[in-house]
Amino acid sequence: MHSNITMLAATSIYIRNDLKVQLNSLKKHPKESYNDVIERLLKLAIDDEPLGEEAIKGLEEALEEIKAGMFISEEEIMKKYGVT
Image (cartoon, rainbow, N blue to C red; front, side, top):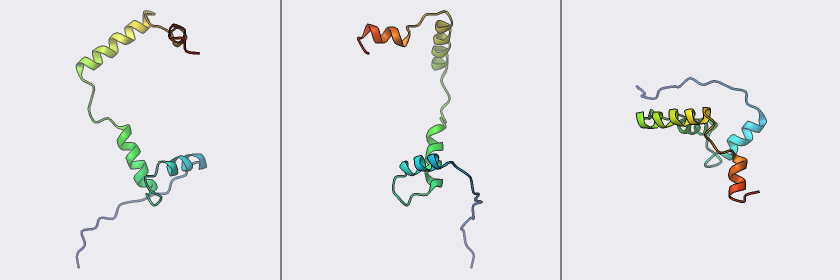
């Protein structure tokens, strides 16, 4: 009998207890595997779409403004809007 099941390599990893607690809290259901949780997190962390030219130009302009001191500090914004 021929099987189409592919065996995937597996490994054990060490994680701190606090990270395990965080992974547990991210499970969609109690029986979801850590592998599934980590895979979901990785998909969220990787952006498959590169930035367009317009976005890159905007970021470069913003960096130049920051370097030139053209920005408002968080403290100034909070004063302006009465946030304490």
